[in-house]
Length: 332
Image 1 (cartoon, rainbow, N blue to C red):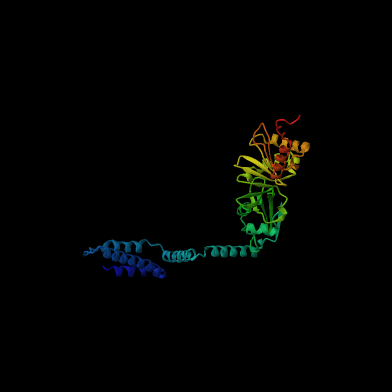
Image 2 (image 1 turned 60 degrees about the vertical axis):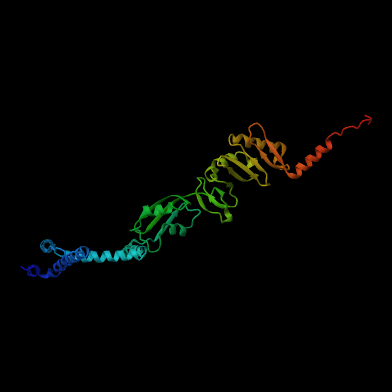
């Protein structure tokens, strides 16, 4: 028979491709031997070895293996091993960066280097910050710049509401930004942040350029600040002396004035309460009195809490005005 003879004649009939097919057939033989060892290891009794199926496998590989498949399989195995090593070793990001840099370098050498960047609508962010957010650097090429990815990166920044990217070949990049504006300071859980009108947190409060922004305090105040502050603006007599607006229970607002006076507003009909406050201050100088709190939560009354000194003075005044009882025999 023998199988070795058939193998030799088959390989010789191919000519220059003999080594490739021999390698593949050899792999099949090794697979057969490995399967036989695994079977013997699993079965303690004397195994019955049927060599015919494995011989058929060798004959099938020898007969139907396409030319140069051995080289292709070897290359795929090497690439798979290299890819596994890159991922397992934690070098995937570095490899991707190197691949991108190589691709961009080729495009730049072909004349697609970004030579001019135009950024419109920028107010809070500098040009360098915008480019750093988008990942655009001196190695980037206009040819391989993904406009959609750049736009998504820019919109992920809280200062940027929207962005439009234009690629003007061969080397001009235009970025049109719609930035959010700093609207108020929001204090929650002991932390202070700059927020926009829609409640988006723009950045932690670290810069004194935002010191004049109105202050809102409490859970949910970031989302409700725009409507309440717009209502408060209609009453400048009250707004001008307000230091902070405090949302209580995510339902109603208190005002803390600059001199420390607390005003407890009702949950409903807030506009009418603010109008009453404005009128009382104009006519009776309410905000200048020696009081610490004004409670307007009940719709039919206004309660004023005096300061400690004012309360003592009022108590003494009532004592002086209280009539004394006449003793028997006193003349009228």
